[in-house]
Every structure is written in structure tokens, then in C-alpha cells.
Amino acid sequence: MTRYWEDYNVGDKFKTPGRTITESMINLMVSLGGYTQPFFLDEEEAKKTIFGGRIAPGRMTIFMMGGLEEQSGMWDEETMMALMGIDKIRIKAPLRPGDTIRVEMEITEKRETSRLDRGIIIHKSVCKNQKGEEVAETEAAHLVKRRG
Image: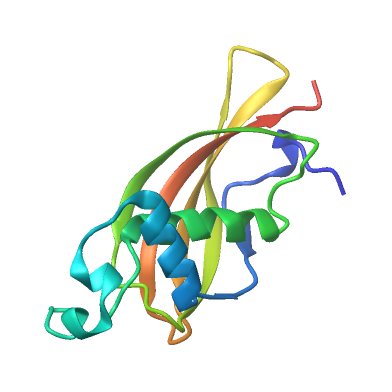
């Protein structure tokens, strides 16, 4: 079903499938990003930190949230135009190898634009691990086609 700007309502909620974070995924993101902190790279060194073990970069959590949100069915490939921004990013807990994360989204605002063929949808996203602990939250704005 194609979903246009008019089809979204403040208060609409969406949930993503889960995704388990592996050591390989963390290794890839740490390598691509050029991260150098021991708690991202070395389990033995990470055990000596406040985290008590290896963790993923917080920015990886946000990246993974984006992919899961696309899998939720919240957005329609024909009507989604662009991500306009991500605000109010909060990393609330470490993301660890073996964690399975899911994202819960809620539409918090809709705005018209000066162009009649598009509108703005703002949603809050909360990422939770398998224990139900909040790992991260964001607020994002997307440009979505209108029926016009």
C-alpha cells in the first residue's frame, strides 16, 4: 500500500524487526570509521573500562537504527523523498556484540511545506535491546510526497 504524507497521523506507531549485532559487524564499522578506542577494538582492554567489555561505537547504533526503520514498513519507496535531519540523538546504553536490537517509532509532528507536492513527517525513534533497555533515541524529519 502506497503511503503519502496525508496517510500519516500524529501518534501513529511502528516497530521494526530485530537484528543481532555481531563481532564482525562491529569490526567492520570500527574499521570503516577509523575508530581507535580500545573498548571498540580489544576485549581484554575493554574489560578494564567502565563498560566491562567490548562495545560498538554509538554512531553504529544510529546507523543500524536507520536500516531497521526502513525494514519496518513505515516508509513507502514511492513516496519517501529524503531524510532531512536527525536531532536529539541520545546514546543511553552501550551496544554490545550479541545484542538484538529493535526500534519503536512514533510520528510526533506533521508539517506542510511551501511546495504542495511534499510535506514533512517528524518521528521519535527508540532503540531497545533484547532486555528492553533503551540503547538510543533520536528525532528525525523526512520529506514525504503528498497526493498533490
